[in-house]
Amino acid sequence: MTLDIRASRGGFGADLRSTVQVVMAPLQAAVNAVVTPVVSFSDGLSNLAGLREENQRLRDRIESLEREAAQVGHLESQVSELETLLALRLGEDLYQLSVSAEVTARGGTLDPTLTIDRGTGDGVHTGQPVVDGQGALIGLVSEAGEAGASVIPITSRRAPAVTVRLPDGQRGVVTGQGAGALELSILEASGPLEGGELLVTFGPYGDSNAYPKDLDVGIVAEAADPQFGTIGVRVEPMGDIERLEYVAVIPWPPAPQFRDGDADEGA
Image 1 (cartoon, rainbow, N blue to C red):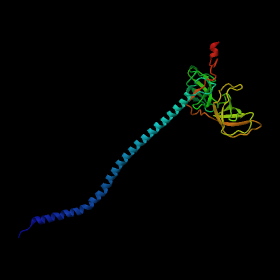
Image 2 (cartoon, rainbow, N blue to C red; image 1 turned 45 degrees about the vertical axis):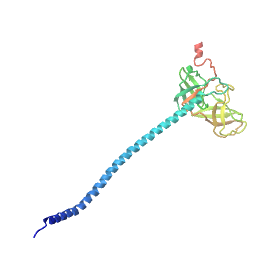
Image 3 (cartoon, rainbow, N blue to C red; image 1 turned 90 degrees about the horizontal axis):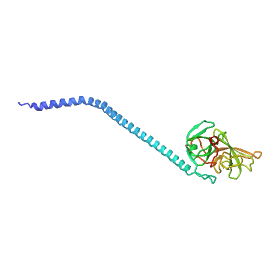
Image 4 (tube, rainbow, N blue to C red; image 1 turned 30 degrees about the horizontal axis):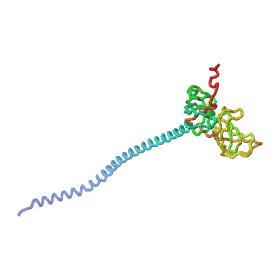
């Protein structure tokens, strides 16, 4: 009798392998169930970190572009304002180009004073009117040195009264009330006053020689009716001194005499 040992051995080995596979299959499945999510979670963390870095780069780029856009807008505004100032010629009363200046400081809150970087060496003298880039009256030079000057806003109680003209020909006086406020007084009112009326300087009149004519001063804040022939009403200033960066000083009067210490020097 001949026994086929190879067949017998092969069958036993195959059975053994099958048995091992049956036993190990649940263990392998359990290992896969644990390892696969861990690997996926690790990959997810890597991807999440990459996304966060990319998002941060995008945010940084957006902030950079926004800063650049704001700077460009600010520069465009400055250029426009300077171009207006450089081209400013105000009425036939003036024959000379106004002196452009930068606002370098602001002092006070209720009754502020502006400091500009132009002085007597540039043709700026005490008493000369100051306007913004749109030609609106801002104030008056109160003190001038060689390389700088101080400006009192027309809203200050210390500023000279401004004689103004209304569109209907009426004449009134605008005075500073402090804290950025103006008031219009019409002593001989010919009728009711509408809100929104533009007030401009009347020009040299009476005892006031402070301002040339046709400078924008302010807007009548509300309608008003005469009371015993007079009107008193609030005025919104045309110029915003809180946001001013550049101004122009008007050579008015064109040839000041005995100002800023000249009288002492000539004595």
